[in-house]
Image (cartoon, rainbow, N blue to C red; front, side, top):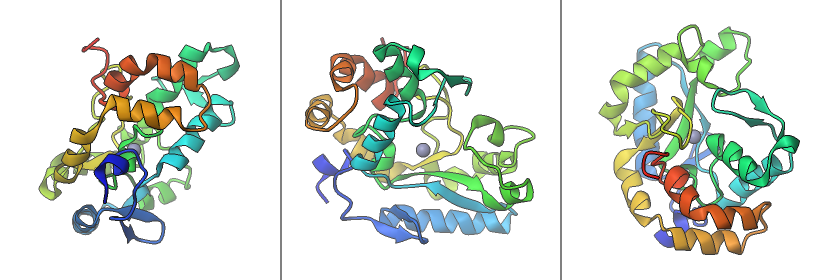
Length: 227
Ligand SMILES: [Zn+2]
């Protein structure tokens, strides 16, 4: 694996399949399966919603949101009217819930989103991966509480636990800490600039002009305190 490419979602050679539809690094997949087994013993049906995602997939999400083909939401989860936003406002609106292509932790094979499938199914199957589903009264609340107590036992933590003006709170997003450290250390604004500059990306000129702020606030997720 070439880390200078892998942190940008452009090298998946080290990944293994986990279940039918997911890919993770071997250590992460092993730790996840052990955690899933313990969760099951404790009555939680912990399943993966999303795991590894490459650069092109993240770029496609970005472009569809920019064009208004996928919905945009504010911090409260209320839908925004993309046509009424300036280009800069659109960038912020996308980045609350979706990472820049090349700037997603899902590029690394170390991070994944989880839910309680049995509980969601028992509630009729409707699932949108939103905050309320992981709060009191939601189908994934018990799993969220279970994770408070057990994630660390398997080497996982939640990088988006607190909304500090960067990425919104994501109680479902887990990272395998020791595996993610090398990717975190590799993050580099100039490399991301060069990567985006050569991509077929909507809103590229706006993003590149804003990249100083976007890199710190959203990619490093230091939020607005550091500005
Ligand atoms: Zn995620």
